[in-house]
Figure: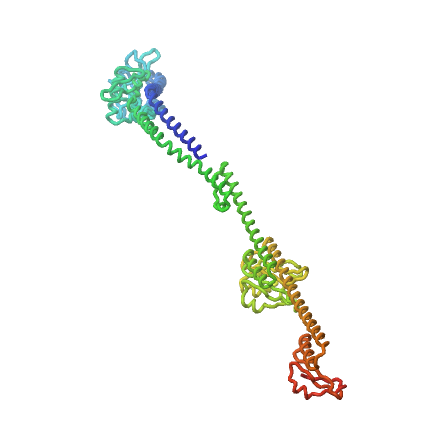
Length: 611
């Protein structure tokens, strides 16, 4: 999987490098077409700006034309009282048309739109053009007396019979034309010039350095002088050729030049071409590295997922947890595997706990089956309970059949005071014991501090909180109690209580078996003693049937009585020869001298002899 992914990524890197290389070749082939693109772009700019300049000039001329028609009647009537207000209205009608003058044929100023106007403008080039009988507007001349230089535009005023009665002269501000030119995007290597017939620059937009600006201006003046129209390529000594587009402004005699240095236009493309070629080589060199790195990065979720899958077969590694971030299919599968691993871990813990419980139960059963030593069985049971249930203390009490008291027989983790003072208790001394015995089932408390009975003095002293007490039953009778406790206020689970009942059942069986075994041993001992006495009695009977002296016979009787009856002192009294008194003839366990002097009359009643 990893190798296949890396191979695919390597091929993708090589294809990417090939695409970059083909892009570089395409760029090189497009260099030639860039010239025609520059030419078309320059021509479009020149034509558009020429139309714009013509529009601005034409608008100013139309204003003067309208004013001239309106002033014809007033001039013929020789009523010039309203000339000044009329000229101001014309001045305000067009922002670029300023300083309007009304003059007669001699050049005398009849009215002006501004204060401080000269009394006469005789000899003004625009006036001279207007006085020409064949002149028609707009008539433009350069106004060299203004700063910055402006244009003078003239409009003849003719009477009803076509006679010239006056001339309107206006100054056309080139600010709007200049701003329009500067607003055109021609780049840092382009230029845009508006030049008249004399080579004077009326407006310009040029961001080249000063030396480059001089070259562009010379080229524009040369084109205006030659009257070039359309797109031309001009050769400049020591410089790259200029691609220029030249258009005439209609009705003005002006030439608009839009120019671009060819080499400067190509320079970004050449730099880009070199960089692309260099990038192509680098791309081919690092394609394998990128493939390996990207392959490792892209296949990282899959590798982590593979680790998870392998961990499923190794339970000891399941707890490590490998989660792939994201919301794609790999992440979803990883999340499912994580949940499965958690479930497997949970089941594994449960199985291990069940195995421990079964092992513990088997330990107690083995102890019960191998020995009848009750103390040994109880000690084994307590050790098992402590390890499996993870409790802090436990003890076992056994019922004393003689007194029905509960006797402490084995304990773990309990304090000395508890062991000393609670070694023997009665059923009524423990409410929990009575409750458990009465029900025949376990009784548990999760936290003794919340128990309303409040009978847990020793437990509080020892820091114990959770309790469980189980009656140890033999058939239907309790034969003891098993108590477990821990310092954590946590209830015992159902599984823990089940294991406690199973262990308690085995301990109850062990207690009853030990008791029965004790009874059996006692009965066997009594039977053996009875058999021994009967055997001694039988031997004595046989011995007495033999013909032996009286003294020996009496000694046999004394020893037989001692063996059969188990007495330590015994004496035999027989009648004397006269038959009046009883005399001691033989004794065992007492001195004979006092007995020889003792005489018991025959027939005495209610008497006793103390030996």
